[in-house]
Each structure stands twice: as structure tokens, then as C-alpha cells.
Length: 294
Picture: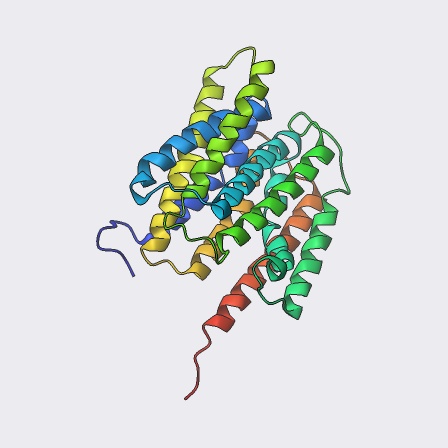
């Protein structure tokens, strides 16, 4: 179904959003600034874009949304740190373990049921995650793979918790962008004093362009396109499947423009994680849409 007010099929809006998300690894790698500086600049411009496009729907804050905002802030921060220290492939694949934490923690936090198929998905993802730590060789673009991998795990865990709190029964925010806005704002407020202690010696044109792109397009515009596409009729299943384009293309951009090659273990582990999560997602939605016989 295409919204009459939307010139493009809403599926394309979701696809464009995911393609923008997939450029995160590339532009984080392109800038010579450290993780804190990238985090500050990206979140500053992202917060501005999200606020400009969604403030009319309200930016009220409650306790549940505040927790979600904090989790979102840690997700973004740890992802930037992971991408700066390990390969882009490791960072994005580890972030995509988020559904594992949803499956494990949702029964305790929001009382969702846990099934045998969930356990299979969790075991497969844990097996895939373990492969990232088999080769910790450093390189020019991945100076501290072990620390980066740990940050990637934190990013995935906080991302999973973030989704859980968005689905919490006590979360009544009408504007889903609220946690995105405040999450980025929290990052700005935390990063300013940290960077003030050791500011970057210089900010080049590439650094500035990379930060502008990351904040305005990779987070801000991408989020607006994604939510607009879903609101215009894209099914959650379709949006989820399209979303798997991000971890597959993210390392490809970095390979093409930076020359960073993921390890064979990372590729194998990433494929296990993506396949397990994708199959679980499809089966989950298929069960919800099985027609009832009369």
C-alpha cells in the first residue's frame, strides 16, 4: 500500500534508510577524529535533525523513555568506539546480536514468553559471537580489536534493551523519536566535558564532512525515512528483512573505500548471527499471520 502523500513506494523509504544506516562504518573510519569527537559531532547534528522533523508530535519525557534514551546513548557510543577499534564488520555484526538479549531478557522485563525456537536462536548467536574473538590481530584501521569487540557486545546488549523498553507497557510516548532525540542529546552533554580535557588538535575538511553526514543523514534523515515508510504501510516483517541489508553492506562500503578486510572468522560468525536472527524473525511473523480456519 502506498500513501497518497508519499511519491515513492514506502518500501523504498525503508530501503533508503537502511542504506544510509549502512554507511556508519565507512564514515566513522574515514575521519581521523577519536571516538569521543565523532560521537559528539554526530549526535549533535542528529539531535537537531530529529527535533526539527518531529517536535510537533511532542518531546515529552517520562521515566521509561528516559531509560530508553540512556540505552540508546550507550548503544551509539559503544558502536562508534567499536568501529574505531575493531573492524567495521565486527562492530556491526556484534550490534546485530541485539535480538538475543531481547529473547533472553524480555520474559523478565515485560513478561513475554520464551520458546524452544528462541533458545536455538540464542545458542546459534552465542556461537557466532564467540568466533569474533578467535583472531585479535591489530591493524591500521582496527588498532585494538579485543576492546572494540567488547564495545560491540555492549552495543548489541544495550540495543536489545532499548527495544525492550520501547515495547514496555508503561511507555506511552506518542512520538517514537523522543528517545532518539534525548539519546543523542545525552551523548552531547556527556561528551563535551570529556573532549574539553583533550580537544582534537585539528579538524580537517574530511572530518567535518564525515561528521555532518553521520549526524544529518546516517542517523537523522535515515530515522525519518524509516519511520515514514513504516507509517505509510511497510509491514514490520518487511522492514525487519530489509534491515538485514545494513550488516551485509556496512563492511562492503569499508572494504571498497578504506580497504579494510574482515577476518574469515568474523564473516563466518556474522553470517551465523544474521541467518539465525533472520530465520527467527521470519518464523515469528509467520506464526502471527497464520490464517485461522473456520
